[in-house]
Image (cartoon, rainbow over all chains, first blue to last red; front, side, top):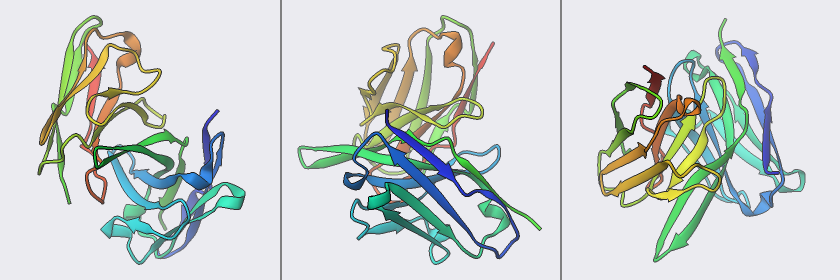
Amino acid sequence: EVQLVESGGGLVQPGGSLRLSCAASGFTFSSNWMSWVRQAPGEGLEWVANIKPDGSDKYYVDSVKGRFTISRDNAKNSLYLQMNSLRAEDTAVYYCARDLGYCSGGNCYNWFDPWGQGTLVTVSS
Amino acid sequence: DIQMTQSPSSLSASVGDKVTITCRASQSIGSFLNWYQQKPGKAPKLLIYAASSLQSGVPSRFSGSGSGTDFTLTISSLRPEDFATFYCQQSYSTPKTFGQGTKLEIK
């Protein structure tokens, strides 16, 4: 069974740091792009960052650039999100998700499947 | 960034009804459009990818259509377990953006 399990969430003060982890199982982790997606309480979904299978390319939403770092350890089948200089607006459930896709006729389609159960990050004093 | 706009934001319907949710992109995105279903307290679940391809295991009452800027998710005959929030998401360019969600409630 393909499974993603996040951990590391919690309460942190503004300006603080937190490191999220995502343990993957049931698929070849080292062959897949991976993403972090967050959801503020009562709000919609926001893609945060993704990383290439070998870790050589990483992309971020503008609001976290320079503060968050996505990384992976393929030997441990694990994805990470280092979050620094946290703000109240970073409060959210953070999901890891596999970036799946295929290419056809020169177009490469991608989607998120599966998702982990999420881990809650609360930034508050 | 590409903005995704869903309509309606909320919808009340009855079991057995046919329901259509619309998603509009701020620029043409071809068929780079996915749909997800999220139930309260749960992670989103993929329903449709590449605008019209049904994810394995998803009931055939769900269907997707559209290309360019306008897309629809249709549920042909609502079942009790379908009441949830639905999100569209474009994968045409980074950042990958979502619609604001459509909450489907029981009438």
